Image: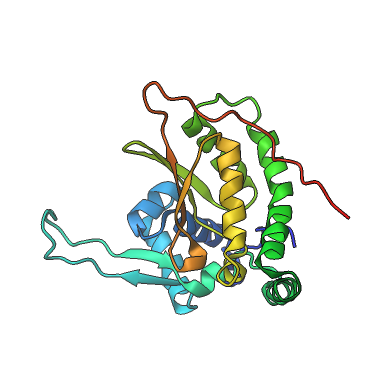
Length: 244
């Protein structure tokens, strides 16, 4: 039950499936997006993009929001409609064995309690941590630089991760979670993942939002180094000692 996220939306299997998968991936990563922005990113016409969006809307994979034309600060011209993936489309991005995983964790909880679930969650993310650590090995010690490298590593794992800089630090945003349905019942999965992020960037971090909690993106705040402050050393995960 290791974290995996490789399956594409089932509704995108069409003759134009490659373009539709790219549209779906952009909507997953960017959230509310206009047809113009999608066309610019894909290098195709807005007419072609709207054709895909209309078909995906009819299939329940995409919905749209009409902008508030009376909103202050809006210039002349017709306001642009924005599109986003539906919950059904998000679900098709790789929620493997949700029912089996949930049942297994319920059994662990019943027989071992919350601590057993936490230990299981830590073990499950350990292999992900090893792969990401290898991918970002050699990155400078600055937490934000390591977060950017970590985002690339997580994206390669299927998490559609990005970073952005904000006042006082940065944010690591994961636009897809392969275990969000299970983590909604067992937040220990999110807590174990947050601990991994902290170890890999070498700094205490704060989880601000999770898809499992109903948010659109898993967002982790990474404080930037303050003047005169030092970051945590980059260390390996503590070894667990088994006792008989």
